[in-house]
Image 1 (tube, one colour):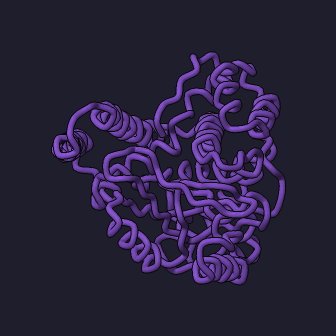
Image 2: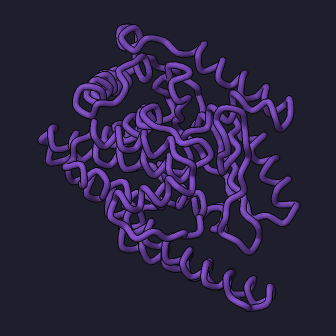
Length: 356
């Protein structure tokens, strides 16, 4: 199981179409994408010439998963994830998240076409760390999330990457389903909506895919990873709720800083207890190594905040994915405030304006 699959994925439009921030940022996005395209080869060709039996087997599984995604889940049937690119590094992108010191609300950066997103993506880790250091110097909390895969929303044929080819098969399926979901519906200026929808699709797709595998070992792997994932999400949610109440209070900034430090100390202690229960398995060590911070909490909540609403909407459509996708596309076309109200109503939730 990888540490945190949902630490940031759909970064390409922000990178490719950024002509706003600096020429340097714009160019690193263009050159990074061109590198991916130049390295990508048709998967059947790679299977034929690869010397590593594991890579051959994994790529064969990728083709089967990719076909399943379109045939059974109704996800776009195009050239995405039918080519393979070897990158020689752990992540394809590094996303930088930032929040004010005493707030859980993530900073936004806006770009043509892609709209506003709650992170800045970099193809070079050194560039991401430099940006994070710059933001931290202004007083912001920051977090850098390693990204194994991303979506260009159909602008390019996204390749399968070496950054996640060695993941367990269920995690590869998750990523492919998630990234293809971004090609189904995309709401401009609404990271929470886009990522929560993609997570809901990945989770439903994985559940159906696993049911068709009839593999007890895979079922056990999935059950274990879900137990870890749910425990981590619950820990993040508890800490966010505690801090949201603190930051909204009339306490002095000094008292808020003290309470913030105590909340994060408690979070680290709770994670250490979780790890003991997991036999020492450090599923989220990479995430905790950077903090935690307000920004790292935001990096998780951006991907999970509205997942229950999308799950309820899918249930309201009797699990019929084409109808579900049509509803989501219609919601994505609405103005953001109207979209939030309509999603909550469609899913049977009371309308609320939770902090990001």
